[in-house]
Image 1: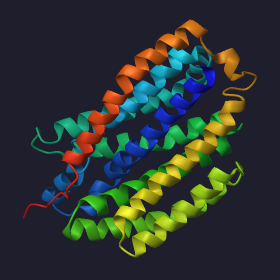
Image 2: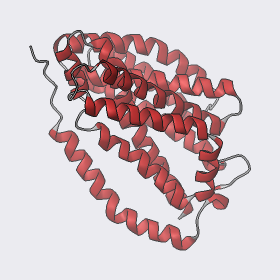
Image 3: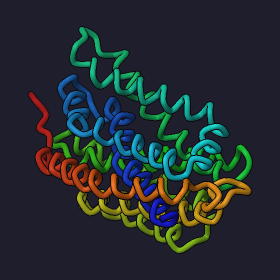
Length: 292
């Protein structure tokens, strides 16, 4: 049960970074790839139907940690209280911006809130997970820079995949520029892990760059998503040994009865959530057209 719930939590965090990763990227890039209010609306419309559903993954991941590994949950969120608080502030700021920008006369402050509220979590989650693996501020800063760069690249590819016309062209240019930063940062950040998934993630990011150049946005998005999955596999392989310094999984876990009850609850609810969210993406799978 302990190993099963560790895998489930790893899966939930991975799903969060894959899905919210492009949300964060779109939020940061929308003002850069848009030249008119119509283009800005179209850029944000690519994530409009899904961004709040994507946030459910982090709520579920944190809730699962609290229930299955309370000592890990307590240690992690106590040690990183300030960055986690800033992450929550960013998510609130972004949510308010996305919900209010169509209801106000001047959406400038909403757009600023979306950009800042996307950049803060994108950077700070990387800093938190790097802090779990390595000691020192330099490692945290490098981890934050890596996740920020990956989110920008992931979001740019998603924008190129989901839009048409000038926005699509600018998003492709932004993706190529982001790839030029992301790949070397990935080499610096992931080399210290030295595991096969980390090395494969670097290769996936390099492949994404080539695919963007060839205008294969769908495959490029698959490559950036795959890179995130591989990075999370590498991270959780390390955390499996010791989720916190001096703490093993067995020491961090809840009792057998609690884990068994959680398993039954998860067996009932998780398939429904996955099917529902998959259906949502299928319904909104078409490219967003920019109004004239």
